[in-house]
Amino acid sequence: MILIESHGGDDHLAPVRSELELRGHEVVVLDSGRYPVETSIAISYDDDDAPELSLTIDGTTHDLTTCRAAWWRRSQPFTLDPRLIDADARSFAYTESSEGLEGLRALLKVSWINDPLRDGRAAHKPYQLREARRAGLVTPRTLMTNDPVKARAFVADHAGERTVYKSFLAVEGAWRETRVLREDEVDRLELVQMAPVIFQEYVEGDVDLRVTVVGDIVQAAAVHSGRTEYATDYRMALDTVVMEPYALPVSVERSVIRLMRRLGLVYGALDFRVRPNGEHVFFEINPSGQWLFIEEKTGLPLTRTFVDALASADRGSPHPRSAPSGCVDCEQNTSRAARAGALVGA
Image 1 (cartoon, rainbow, N blue to C red):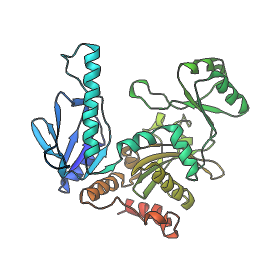
Image 2 (image 1 turned 90 degrees about the horizontal axis):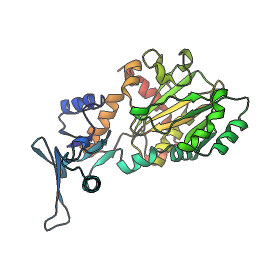
Image 3 (image 1 turned 180 degrees about the vertical axis):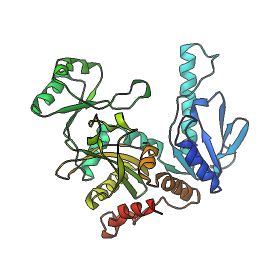
Image 4 (image 1 turned 135 degrees about the vertical axis):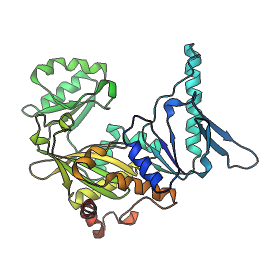
């Protein structure tokens, strides 16, 4: 059995679930937005130390002790019983619901993509930037602060160069693209005291990269952001931007693998920009980032690769690796990008 934590509005859920079921795997989807009112859990201890774990959805009970693989995709806020109108009662119910579900997750004997705790930590940009540097990747000069004095000093230190600013999270209700700081915005830096902002040096370059990693399989796409009307953030032109498969330099690919292992992730979507001199600059990693828009434009077999990993885990096999974990720097690891390109034509 494969457990997927997601919801019906996630466009990545349907193709993954469909392919897994076509291959004969039992798939159970937990939408935490329907918990605890429409979905129930049960953790039962009898005479031994192995509890019985079950999940009931739409009247059907699933025995989670048979679950061997799980995909942590898009967990949703719980929906409490509307009869709970007292604020303290709602807070108590929410906390208790969280404790129960998190306890259930902790008891599952599954191979996670990704482990929820590691996924959550890896999503923090301050942490991932440090780990990226330790993994050997180049990152932009960066300041994350809600101190206007420090923000002004950072901008002043980069006088004559462009500075970009962006948010920590891409929140659906308050999404913000990456922006170049304008001169008329410098006087508004006092506003950062309301919430921290990420400031970075502007990285010159006409090509961005989206690097999708599953296990040790690395597949990269070049995004020709320099050909769009808003080169600072190609997400503003997703419908028209040109993308194509890209072969990462061996040294960069090795560092990507190191970063994934340092973060404890099986899956990740990484963003880079290539400077005119060929230097690859790491921006961020999204542990649950999207891949369908890359697959549709490039033909890279990203869904198939991801499904392979879940199916392998459900069979009790390790996640896909192109070399033993101790051989990240072995020369035989140099062909992963070429192999991914070959899969495109398969």
